[in-house]
Length: 199
Image 1: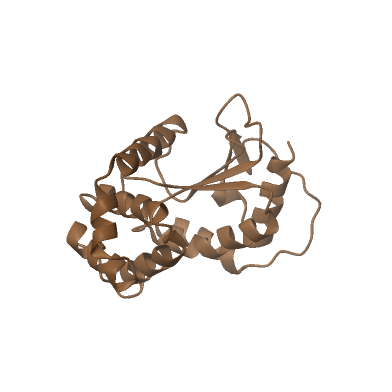
Image 2: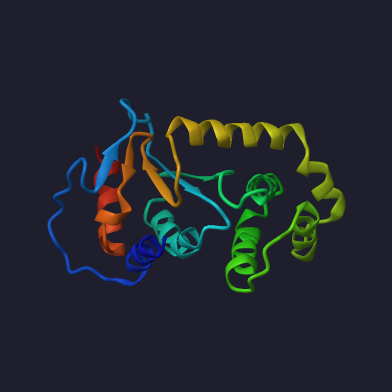
C-alpha cells in the first residue's frame, strides 16, 4: 500500500527530462480489451477513500486540460471503504446528477484525507452537500432516484467489464490499462497516455 502511494506521489511531483517515447505492452500498459473505442476516451476508476486517488487528481485535471478533445470518465468503485464504499459511490453519482461534482469531489476528498473526517452514513453525505449549496429537497430528490440507481448499475458494470480491483486505475480508449508502477513520473504519464490515444 505504502509502495503504491510512493509511486503515485512520484507521478505527481517528479519531473522527467525528455526522452523518446518507446512504450511497450506489458511494461507501461496492458491490453485489457480486444477492440478500442471509436472515439478517444480516458476512464479513471477511483474511490474517495483511496489516498492514491486523492494524490492523483491534479494529474487527471492537467490531462483534461491537455486533451479537450477527449472524453473523460470517472467511475467510482464500491469495493473500497467497507460499508461506506457504496454510499460514497452513490454520493459521486448524486453530485454528477446535481451538476456539483467539480465542487463536491474536492470537498469529500479533503474531509476524508486532510480533516480525517470519514462520513459514517448517508446523513453525513447529505450534510456535506447542503453545506456546499445543495438544497435538502434537491438532494432528497436524487439520492434514491431511478436515474442514480441506473448510473450506479453502469458504474458497477464498467468496473466488472475491465476487471478493476485497485485504484486509481486508468483505461485509455477502452483497451489499454496503464501500469502505474512502470511509468514513474508525471511527464511520462502524459507521454504514455498521448501514445495510447494515438493508437
